[in-house]
Length: 258
Image (cartoon, rainbow, N blue to C red; front, side, top):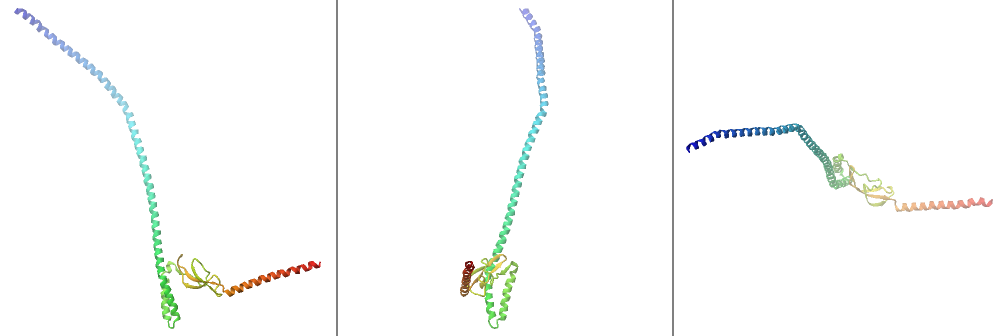
């Protein structure tokens, strides 16, 4: 019984190395299969790299074109913004120039108005000085007073002569409604009709600006002169009519004789 068991163990022991060899063969077979699989797997990778290498220039060109298009768009936008800013700058400069001119004109007009108002304030004073000058000339021993008053009046006009201050001529001049203000009429033969016979208050102008019109009395023909002129006109008309009537029969006489 024991010998039988040994016989069975011996063949089993011999069979064990055969199993290991089989396992090794199987492992070698698996390694070859894996190597083949790796080789097969590596072939598509190399092909993909080759395709990627061929497609890289095209992708780079597309990217460059896209960047150029973006830069062109940005350039156009910047040019548009520059044009808008330049237009705004020119408009602002024009507005500022107009504002400067308008301000200078308003300032000049304000100064002119202030000077005119100041002179108008002084005019009644000059009127009183001139009245006093007239009284001083008429009073006995008033020559020195009249001389002093005359110097005051002369100094006033000399101070504003550079500004164009001048007295408006009125006496004996034809009535001018732009410089004269008529307060009445007077019948006189010494002054032509329609001319200024009296000056009640002097008028003044500053350059082309009227400070104050002259208060005047305008002359008109006397009533007697008007009647005489009407009578002479009627007589002349009658004489002309009579001459026409006398000339008619004188012309008919010879016609009747024939």
